[in-house]
Length: 177
Image (tube, rainbow, N blue to C red):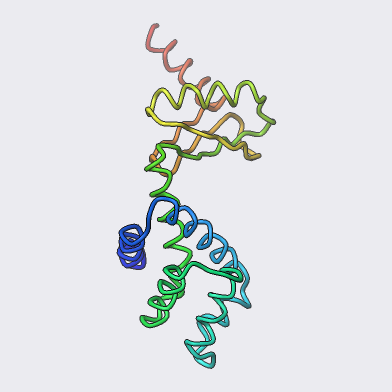
């Protein structure tokens, strides 16, 4: 439900701003979203003891000294409808829209061992050709034996594990006999 409501706000924001302003708004909203990682901040935002005006001032204060007037109005609109809690989702959806427009997607590569930069760039290159978009991969250490590549925004997930390759080879050999 929150995602559907957040999509409407993102659509309105995109319709009201130019490309440059959208990028600026996305970075500002991402900065505000980081504040939602702090439990004390969330407690203030959801507390009925803190007035809407005080919550609004707190969030607008995170935008810097001279915030964009349209973004301030956007925050005020969220306050009117008591939707400050949607800011992280709005920020996430706005980032995804910017990625889609730029045809550039970010993903992760999980592996037990550190991945060589050359292998990482080869993976990025081949995936970019496969999905017809620019792909940027970030290595993440995990406990799995093998490699797992995930690009969430494209719904792409591929994994290669030693156990599965061995299992597939055994199955193939048994079928051949």
